[in-house]
Length: 252
Length: 254
Image (cartoon, rainbow over all chains, first blue to last red; front, side):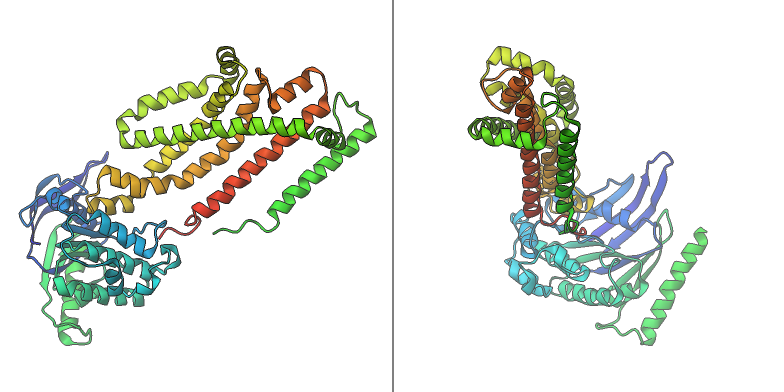
């Protein structure tokens, strides 16, 4: 799914209006895995919420394959994963996936079973367990399986692994890449971890502190699996970090 | 699942036993006349001398309490569900519910007895009125308090309002329903007894009223003992059910 964002502005009209996004233009081609990185409070999450149709922009336009966010949402074409796995505690592991499958049944055009989805994330042996008995990493894997079964054209991910420890985070990032490879949906992945962004994404977009503006746009043309000890990786790491630091300093 | 405090139940039983012993000792030492305060032993004696009378009265009162509680429960859940699906109605309906709630029950009960007679119907209505409000308020807040991250998930599925209600809000409200039951179950007994007090052909309230007008305090206290035991049992039953049904509670939110 192609994402076209033009002159996007968003202001929160709290007693003191707080601009969150300023004049954002962004074009993500279909199938691209893009990371959005920026200091906290730069409007990354707001951007994802606008695309998901959870918020209405103050001005500007968002088109998803030519459709408005509301239309794309109605077609169940936009999948959502946040920092909280948002599992339903009264349902088992397979129950959580089965519910997603059931509520999405009208548009599922593929035949992935609950069991297959669980196998893809290595949870087939925990099917009857309840979410509260799982570790944080397993819970987020379950959320990934649920995301997968939606078969959406766009994955919106708001720091999905931020609450996990480093090793689990790396495992899940690798798993995310594996899950993304076959169908290659468009991914907009918000993170504040530069290293993680460079490990996974084809493109890294850097936003300034609030109100968020695009300050840099890097293409990461490195083959997978990526090694961080190569000069190319280290160069990019340095460039992204410099861009981010400059944006923060400029705003200060 | 959170374990009960070790010995919590035993401590409660010990305190009650200790209280009864002090009571017994105080009565026999100070020789308080039985028409003012009977000793616990005398009360239990009365209870066991009239097993059939108390069994019949208890059965009737508990039956009324259960029926009223069931109706109050159903009405509360139904109206809370309706208000969740049609939020526009909330303010109006809640105003009416609070109006009903603030009308003193002791004023309505005799009226219902005058209109509907000495049978069980006015008792069930009073009990239902009394138990309905805690259920309505608690369940409504449970239905409305779905977590944001869950609501966002259902939004991303483009789930209908009915689907959100059935698969998210309703299970989410179950713990609140049990919180309400813990208040409403003992209230149901009070409702039934107070209604019987205003005129009845049977039941523990009737027994109490007769004993009271005859200054037969052992009779009165025997009924009170039964009510206390029944209230406690109802509460324990609610907690037992809650532990089984809301098994996911007292675990950190996934």
